[in-house]
Length: 72
Ligand code: HEM
Image 1 (cartoon, protein in one colour):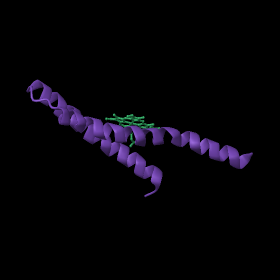
Image 2 (cartoon, helix red, strand yellow):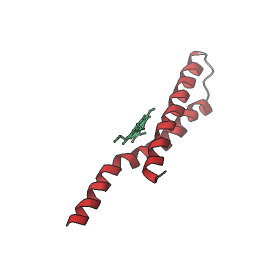
Image 3 (cartoon, helix red, strand yellow):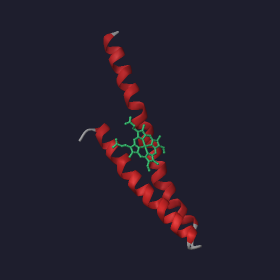
């Protein structure tokens, strides 16, 4: 599996973890059992998503820069 594909798969699976953490957060708030570590449960996958997401965002531009340099 190449690097780009690996990043996309990681981003996709992190979105599942993040969604589960958000649901856990909501349940904890409703039950009045919210703690800071439950909050961090959602923040952690979100930070990783930010980096993998930014990588995915730059990919098409990076491909364009590469082909532009090759044809110049
Ligand atoms: C934190 C900042 C985030 C950034 C900067 C970001 C950025 C991106 C980018 C650039 C793509 C690729 C779009 C394309 O196909 O060209 C993408 C795909 C995707 N993002 Fe995010 N994202 C973020 C957070 C999230 C969150 C919070 C979720 C859901 C809980 C999410 C779920 C997804 C999914 C499911 C895809 C499609 C992945 C695939 O193609 O298999 N992302 N994101």
